Image 1 (cartoon, helix red, strand yellow):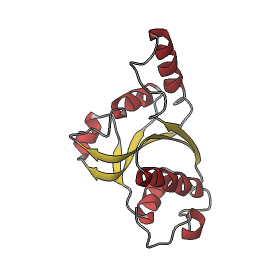
Image 2 (tube, one colour):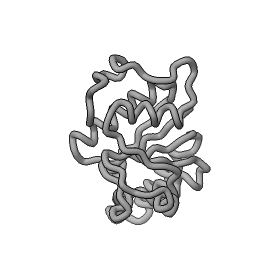
Image 3 (cartoon, rainbow, N blue to C red):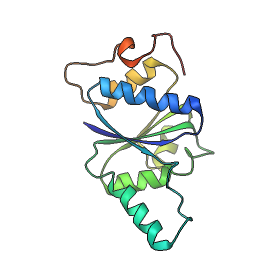
Image 4 (cartoon, rainbow, N blue to C red):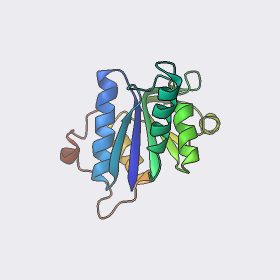
Length: 159
């Protein structure tokens, strides 16, 4: 399974969450690609042709993926998961790839998630949360969960 982690985080805690999720998914058997949306996603900077080219390249990067996981520090109905979730969901829909959200805080209903083009949302506050996400979404071959030492955390660690 090939998973794209589309990230929109700005704090050290957010970056730690991204690393934790990536390691957990790899341990569950997924091939993980990363797309940092905070780099080069500005739709207003530069010449229109350059912007269109850059946006087309970002959209094309979703082709061939089995799952898109949008990682952000907070997901509420009010913030909609940050400034890029709707665009990510649109690209994923065009590539016929499901989108889920993993967030440090997830306070949104399933119905509200669907209005954003998202299949599910998960709060990522502990190693167990990463395991649950990996078990639910990643097809595994032999390993159903990652061991604490393989991920680099104790089982009592929280983020």
